[in-house]
Length: 369
Ligand code: GAF
Image 1 (cartoon, helix red, strand yellow):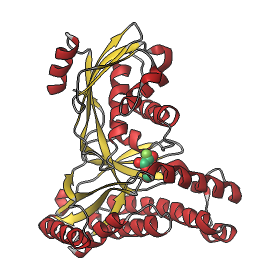
Image 2 (image 1 turned 30 degrees about the vertical axis):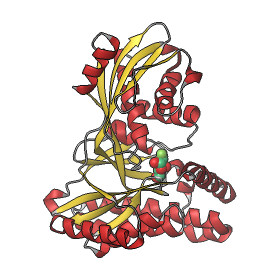
Image 3 (image 1 turned 135 degrees about the vertical axis):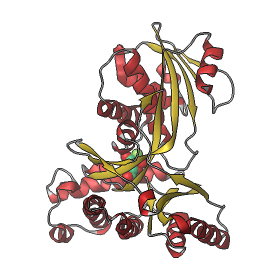
C-alpha cells in the first residue's frame, strides 16, 4: 500500500496501524443536523487512509502524499495550519490520552467537490489513534470527537452528519441518523437492482464565503427556535402556526428545516416499501427548498439539477453545505450518457467550467486496512 511505503520511507519503520475513512454524499436531510433533525448520507468510494504510530514525546510528524515536500514536524499544536489543523485538532481533543504521533496520509476524495474530505481525515486519524491507544471509543464517539475538533479547533460550526457518515456507514446502505438522540440505522440502498445509479455532478465551484454563510444559517435557525420557544427547529410540530410567528429569513429557514425533516422520513418510507424509483420527487423538492428557502444553492448547482432532470434523471439536488460543491442525480442506468450530455451542454451554454461526473455507490465506513 502506497501510504505504508511512504510511512516507512519517511519514518524508518512500519506504522502501528492503518485506517481508511470515506467521504460522503447526503441523499437527503440538508442543514437539518444542527437543528437536531434527520439526515440520510452514504459513504462514497473515496476517502482518506492514515498510517499511524504513537510517540511518547508529544511531537507530531505529518506527511501527506497530496502535499509537496517531506514530513512536517509540529512541536506544538499552535503551529498547525491548513489541512494539518484537522489532524492536530483530533489530537488536541484526545488530550492527555495521546502524546504525539508519526502520521502519513493518503487521500483520494475529489478536491473541493464538497464530499467531506475533512471529516474523512478526522475520522481516519481518530480511528487509528483509538485503535493504537486502546481507547475503546465507539464509531459514534469517534464521529463526535471529529466534530468537536472541527468546531473547537478548526472553528467550523458543522453538525454531526459528515463525521457520522464517515465513521458508521455500511457498504450498500445509507445511514439514517437522528441527530438529537444519535440513534442510527443503516438502510439498504440498492439502486442497481432498480436499474438506477447515483451520479455526482461536481460543479468545481467553491465560494470563499461558504463557511460564514453556514454559521449565519445556523444562528438564524437557533434564533428562530428561541422565538418559537422550542429547543430546536426539529421540535416544530405546527408549521403553519410557527411561520405565523416568524418573519423574513428566519421564517424561510424554518420552512426549509421542518419540511426537509418530513422529506427524510418520507424518503425512508419509500425505500422501505421498495419504491426506490419514486424518491426522485423528494430530491427535487429538497433542492427547491434549499434554493428558495434556505438560500444555499448557486447558479452552477441549479443548472446541474435542472439539466440533469431535463436529460432524464428521476430527481436531483445539491448535496452538502452548498454554495458550490456537488449535486447528485438519480439516473436510470440507460440514461446516464444523456444526463451527462445535458448537464455538460447547459454548462457550456452558460460559460461555466465543465463539470466532473462521478458515479457514487454506497461504500463502507471507517475500517482498519
Ligand atoms: C456541511 C456540514 F459539515 C454538515 O454538518 C451539514 O450541516 C451539511 O453541511 C449540510 O447539511 O457538510
